[in-house]
Image (tube, rainbow, N blue to C red; front, top):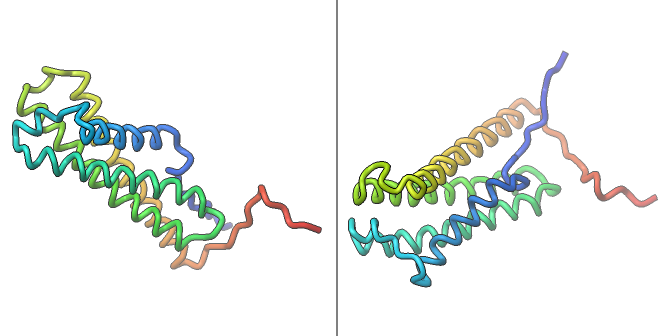
Length: 164
């Protein structure tokens, strides 16, 4: 008996992941608008702080666009979903590095646990972004394994019944 299960790409419908991506967008927007200054990063290097805010802004926009793109193209098939998921994975990995750098700068500048809420939030965002990358890689591995085994089928959208 065949125990195959459908492969599911999970991020587009996950409100927590979307919320983390939006937070990852708002932080550099505030930094670029000079409402928020990444003082700990500036203490390490002012150039690093500038690169950090712009890189985080760009990758947050890309990650959000990729997540929305996967939602939009889900009915079209695997190749587009895989491409958008790869794009999200690369952007989210860079996002993890950005938040990891901020966490490291906070710990370096103020000491571990000096600002526990800020350090916890930034650290969790970095770890959550890394976890999302691992999730995308795992989903793509399962999808490619199903393709190699010839166990993929086209799926029609249930919300769009055929006209009779």
